[in-house]
Image (cartoon, rainbow, N blue to C red):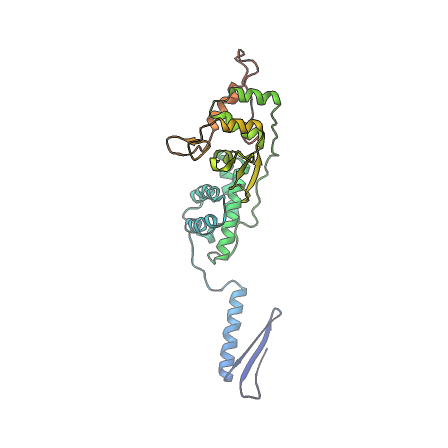
Length: 287
C-alpha cells in the first residue's frame, strides 16, 4: 500500500486487497490520500456487510412484477406460475424479501403438506419461488437468494396405468358421443389432452392424412399421422366451426372433459348387471 509521485507530477495510490489491485492517478497528494481512504472504507463496508442498503421490497410486489416481466414474457406455462404465486403470496404477504428466511420457507412446505397438497404441487411452487428469488437478486431487489438451499419434497414414483385392449373397447363403448372422438384421437396418437381439445379444423389435413400440432408443449410444431379410424371419425363430424371440439355457446374450444371421462370410466363395466362392478378404476386421461 503506497502513495507516490510520478515524474510527470501526478500522484498515485496503489494497493491490493484479497488479490485485487486498486490503482488510481490523481493531481495532488491530498486527493490521492482522500480517494484511497474512501475506497478502502467502501471495500471494508462491503466485505463486512455494511454496504449500501438496498430498498426493502414486499414479497407480493416482487411476485406481481416477476409474473408480468418474467413468466408471461418467457414461459408458455406462465399460468402455472400464476397459480403457484397465488399460494405463495397468501403465505408470505406483508413480508419483505429480506425477511423470508430458509426456515420460513420450510414452514411454508409444512403448511402446504398439512393442507393435503401433493408433494409434486408443493415442489412446483418451490421451483417458482426459487426462480423468483434468482430474479430478485438479478434485478437488485434482494441481496441474497433465500430459497437456494431449500430442498424439494420427496415425490412418490409415478405410477403407470396401461389400458388393455379389452378396457379400451369398453371405455369407447361407454363414452358419450362428444367424448368418443376425443378418446379415439388420444388412444391412437398419444396426443395430450390440451392439444386435442385445442385442435382447429385448419389443423386437419385430410388429403395428406395428418394432424398439425402447431402449439405443442415443447414449443415446436409437429405432424401426427392419422390412421383410418381417426380419419373416418373426424370426417363424420360437423366441420362448420373453427374448433374440432367447440363449445356452441362460447364458440371457443372445450376446455376440459374431466366429468365426461370420469362418467365413461364408471360406465365401462365388465358386467353391467353387477352393482359392485365400478368400471375402469384408477385411470387418468394422461394415462
